Amino acid sequence: MDVLIRDLPDAVHSELAHRAAAKDMSLRAYLHDVLSEHVAVPSMHDWLERVSALDPVGADICSGADVVAAARNEDDELVGR
Image (cartoon, rainbow, N blue to C red; front, side):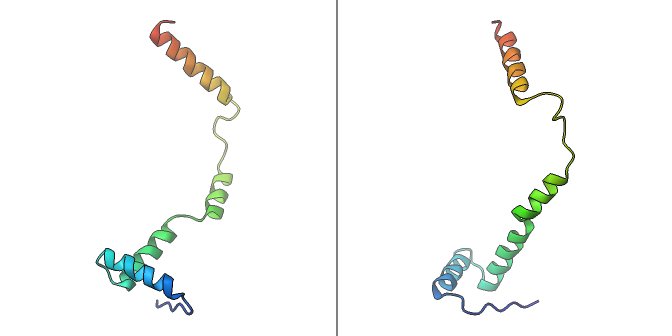
């Protein structure tokens, strides 16, 4: 698929061309990589939807304070306090 971007500011085009040249790539290849990397990461909206659909894991077992207290007790036992 071909994409045409109209009215791209000259400064943006120059910077993209500079970054492509710095990687010894054509502008087309560089933009292909940049866009591919961009869509490989889910958007914040999609990520939040996925996370909110997950079932809670052990939230009713203990609180964060309980976990910290248990870790401190374990550390105290290791150092013989």
